[in-house]
Image (cartoon, rainbow, N blue to C red; front, side, top):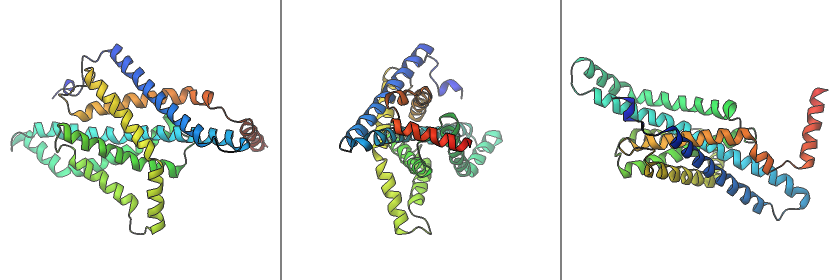
Length: 283
C-alpha cells in the first residue's frame, strides 16, 4: 500500500489554489449570512444597545462557526486516520502465520484502544488549534464545549452518509464511539435534570452552525469529487478530510486577516472601555 492510494497525484498546485479559493468563498458566504442574521436580530433594539449587541453577537457567532470547523476537522482527521490504518492492517493480515499474521492479531487486540487514543489526540489537536493557531477569544469555554459536542454529531452524520454511498461498515466502530461520547455528555451519573436541559439547550442554539457547516463541507466535497480533485476510488472519508483541511486553512487566513473587524467595527463606547481597562491594568 502506497501513499498514492490515498491521495490524488494529479491534484496539481493550481487546482489546489482553485479549491482553496472556493473554500474561502464558501466560508466568506457563511460569515456574511451570519452577520446578516445578527443584523436582522438586533434591528429592533434601541440605538444605544443595537451597535454593541450587533458587534458582540456577530463576532461571537462567527467564532463559534470557526470552532465548528476546527472541531469538525479535528474529529474527522483522526477518524480518517483510524479508517486508513484499519485498511492497511487488514491488507497486511492475509495469512495466519508470519509477520502478516502477527500484525493482524496485534491490530485485532488493540484497535479499540488505538481508536480511543486517536479520539484523545483529536481533543488535544482541537485545543492547540483554537487556542494558539486560530485563537478564538470571543467564545466562552461553555460555548466551545457545546460546539465540540456538536462536532461529534457533525462527523457521525458524515459517516452515516459515507456508509450509504459505498464505504459500507467501515465507519461503524468510529460512529459507535462518538455516539457513546455524545450520550455521555448529556447523561452522566451525577447529572441533574437541569444539567441535561442546559446541555440540550446549548446544543440546539448552535444547531444552525452545524447545518451550515455540513452544507459547506458537503458542497465543497461534491465539487472536489466532480472535478477530480478528490478520488472516488479511495475511501470517501479521505476526500472529506481533505475538504476539511482546506476549510481549516481558509479559516486561518480569514480569522488572522481581521477582515471581520473591518466589516463589523467595535462601537465607540466599546473601544473606550477597552482603553480604560488597559490603563487600569497598567496602574
